[in-house]
Length: 281
Image (cartoon, rainbow, N blue to C red; front, side, top):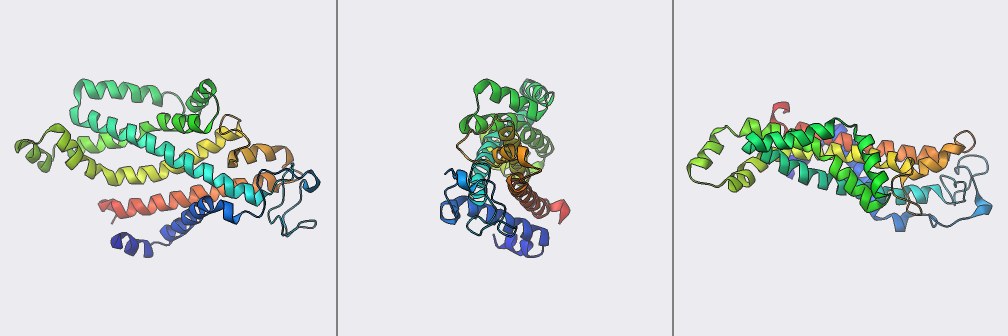
């Protein structure tokens, strides 16, 4: 940890990404304490109030209200909770499937590698968002279904990275020595190969969280993600698309929240890559 903190102090991009990510996580955790108003309560007499710094705005609603009188700031803060939960949960599922299958394919090779590679090819032949749309359309839109779908269609990236790493590491001396002293295949996979692929997996997982948040927002925008009254940034974008010309703040602030969050995660991922990859030190 001390090493990571020392390297972080030397990286302005890493610091910016870390602060951004910390702010998003803090907003997600402390949303009930930070919101200025109930994010789901309707106030038809307060419809389409502009942000506080514009004529007609009020600091009771710093970012304005939407077409149903709901506070935009409160909804953006609560929307961060769904994005964090979906992003982290889906990547954990994808990582578990992808890392396990990549270890098996790279280590055992032969028919095991061929079988897993055919599944990978099948998933790669269909665009990610199209596959997610199809599966969500069959299972139905819900938070649990969305997490499962994004997790099960996102494992391919982990598989390819881990398989390539294992193929490169599997013939090295310490693996051959482990076999020579009688360690089992399971011991070699867990004790020797998995720790060596972990840095690459950590970097990839960080970047995949950003991609998953974008995918969740896209599916929610299309009405196939988490359903109302649960608040999502994609759903807020969908609600605001009809008011872009007259009430721009409805879509602008959730869009900015998505952009800032994704950029923060990407900055952290780039910093982790620089720290964990010895070739870039």
